[in-house]
Image (cartoon, rainbow, N blue to C red; front, top):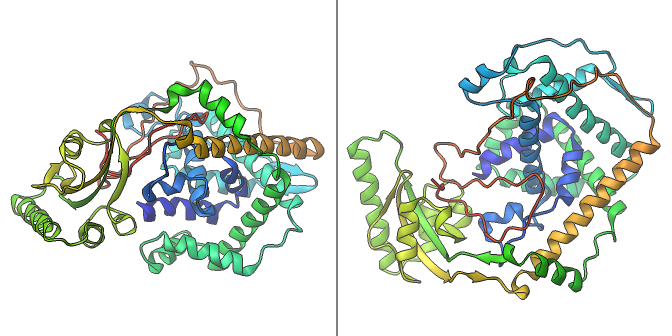
Amino acid sequence: MKSHKNLTLLTFIITLPFAASLLQAQIAPAPITTGAPSSASSATSTSGSTAEKALAKAKEAVAAAKEKLGVRKDKESDQKISGASSTVIALKDPVAVVDGAKISKADLEKAFKEAVASSNMNPATLTADQKIQGYHQILDALIMEKLVDKKSSGVEVSDADVSAEIDKIKKQFPTPDAFNAELKKSGQTTDLFTANLKKSMRQTKWMKEQIQGKDTVTDADAQKFYNENIKQFENPEMVKASHILLLVPQGASDSVVKAKEAAAKAAIERANKGEDFSKLAAELSEEPGAKQRAGDLGFFSKSQMVPEFATAAFDQKVGSVSATPVKTKFGFHIIKVTEKKPAGTASFAEVKPNIIAYLQNQKRRAAFKAEMEQLRQAAKIENFLPAPAIITPATMKPSSLPGKAPASSPAVTTKAPATPTPSVTNATPSPVKS
């Protein structure tokens, strides 16, 4: 799913300079996991690239926007929003002035429009109050971007570093053409994309300098956290496996199903004859991202997988390959079990590195918040937006937005909580939990 995810990332970098999102992505606390993160879950690791972290933060920002705007994705909920319409709100121009630098009405409306579009929201379902709430949220980010941009204007970022970051982003698309097509689709130029990315990198570098040394965590700090949260480190029985997935579209004909099953059986034969399973997965698996992960799913519990897949994986012996193809709603799987872990509590030694990383990120987040508050206090900020309405149950019902993976994707989607808490289960990318 990397190509799909990075369409969102690319859109964010092109349409906003919302460098604030990139800044926060660098210091946002990551969930604690037991053991080393698998390659499949590297996008949430603390050592991920700027692109990966920006993507994670962008997704969180989209989710937060949906919650604050009270927008439903389903038709039934849309109809329940009182007074929903494509209300036009008269805004002053500029909408804000930050230390003499204006934020134009056009810039705010463009950013708002792009945020709504990238979130798959229908603007026609937004009431005036909801739009005002959204405008304030977007404007707040634009104000922060102005403040940080001013402070970071003297920071040097080399063209070589920018080129290297662009190369990382491009590699997360299926092909260079896919990257260029998305850039063209946005109506932007390569030069503008590069300029926005360079600005974001400059701002990120400046912020890192401001919070440097404010994230020290001692072994004693980590031990204290472990002792106080011991239940968070209890693990269910887990299996580590790789798989090859031959996708069967919904409503596929009998001939297609039989062909896919035959291909799965042929893959099992090749694996049993001694061919390297990871190479087979990279060659044969139709799961998005299979080539990059070579079919590796990392560790997972029974509850993280669809029942048919979980039952087969947990019943297999370590080192074994499925005797027959495992049929799920996604298609036919060939599973190779590589390791098993009994249920139990992870030791402090096992989770210490992740606890330290988690606590460091908490401290960075606090330092970032304090730094931004200082910038705001020292700046002259004039906000000309209409005051947001007070949200009550009568004016906005809580939205219900359960996370869903695309129907064509077998990837497991995990939603980060609003307040990061330690988690001891490694998220696995496939297949989808029912």
